[in-house]
Length: 116
Ligand code: SF4
Image (cartoon, rainbow, N blue to C red; front, side, top):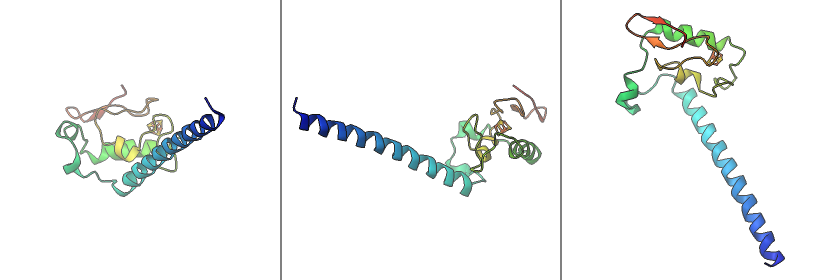
């Protein structure tokens, strides 16, 4: 194999890796912007299966979000540094829970939150 070919293939491999990095970065930024701009979820865009698991109790949502916003793992981009989730979105789901047990799954039947 010629040296020129090796160099060209190496450059292509580097460009491919850099492209993947920036595509992932772009997706993360878009998701972050979406999360910030859509604090209230648009229910029409959500699958019925997921929609059934969304919490409507404002007290529970406020409690979860309060715990997150005062948590040492909460980041400026409204994400949890442990689970990497966008907390304005994750806190809406009944089956979601904090990875270190600060808040747990929500059971609509008893109106309580429990640690999983
Ligand atoms: S999910 Fe738990 S660990 Fe993550 S920010 Fe919220 S309270 Fe903190």
